Image (tube, rainbow, N blue to C red; front, side, top):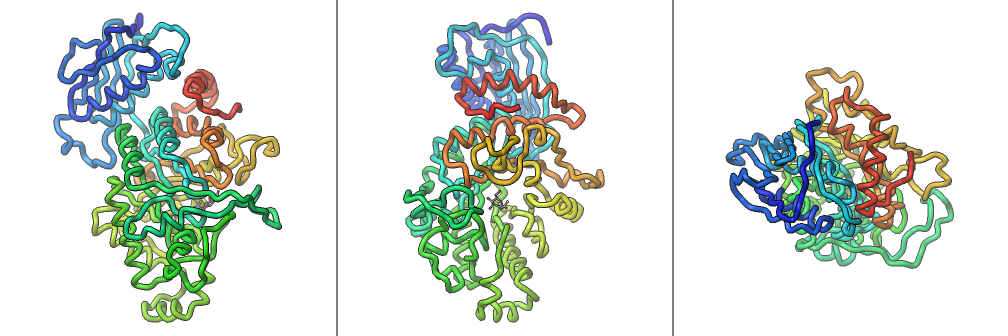
Length: 508
Ligand code: TNX
């Protein structure tokens, strides 16, 4: 902390220099204009005379190392006279402006605040994240969320310095992305005629009479990706295979094993409908992934791979004959063969396959990365094999689970309770992992499966404040974490979230 404070006024100018700095400066200005009413013009160049200056020190983007994981460190210096934010890479500026925003009075987050003075305390901050994969996952398949809702969510995770949005685009209950070569995926696969009412474990099931659906056109996806890219957030698309595909088979029954679902699944749980392994089906998958790759520039492409019931394969003469031809011993190995084919295809296109940890049950393709949602021992084994791991354990980071006890006072949710304290206490490096293997743990992500989340308000409620806790788990050095301090700061942070009209859970 220094002495004094920097006052923002009607004449404040923001200058920016270096690759990508202007766009970040524009973003900062656009966040502040509604509350302050100040014009906050952004000027380009080494205009060090401007009171607020953002400098990206990098002279060209090529020198930045791995473009998928740029340096996100930043240095912020605030005096009564000036604000200087510097970083090696524009990604660091993008994290730094979120700190600058946080230092302003909370009402600066509001669109119509009471009259206020707009100031920043004098200080110096040098900051960098602990993990390079700081993600949130969002399931838009079980319930559809509009482009605006997804972008608002991206803006909120950007505020918490996340850098990945894992978008779960397809599942049994809905296919949410336009694929030009296969128009029925959106026409048929994006709509289910009704949805189960209440808990999926209650029998007999009852259904509403509301068709539910929606999908993102290529244009919609571009809007989402652009919005995220401006915030230096990478959108990781997930296309599920070979299970969780009933919506696709409803659209194109020839992808299945003879059963012909007429519509996407109308209740939760796992459909028995899975892909067959015909050459045409593999061609379909490659075509879909080719279109997906044109829309999502990031290196990682998530192919699901979780929860594949094998009944259909066990009972298909065709599949059994193929297994003999391929020389695979059982259905599990056949799945491994399939994931291997897809991994090779993605690698040929300079992309990297990432899948849920079931893909490791039958041998990982070279270079595959894994999101580990089941027991931590899986993550331990995968990291020891020197495959990249993103921790997503359902015991700690499933934000679709209840967050408070007693659960009967909470809206219907999955699982047992995962409190904000439990999230905060989570340590991403699996216990017992040798020091030299730690680097294979890229980071972690929180999951928002949307079986019981049908609106943006409810999404807020499930996400916050657990997202805030995860943000610290992923950013702070382990020894700097402190739950009591976190709770104190969370009190202040709630004011910011309230100003942003986020429906935060009241506990703790
Ligand atoms: C398991 S986690 C699933 C999802 C469900 C979730 C509900 C994973 C890879 N599969 O399909 O939505 O549980 O918590």
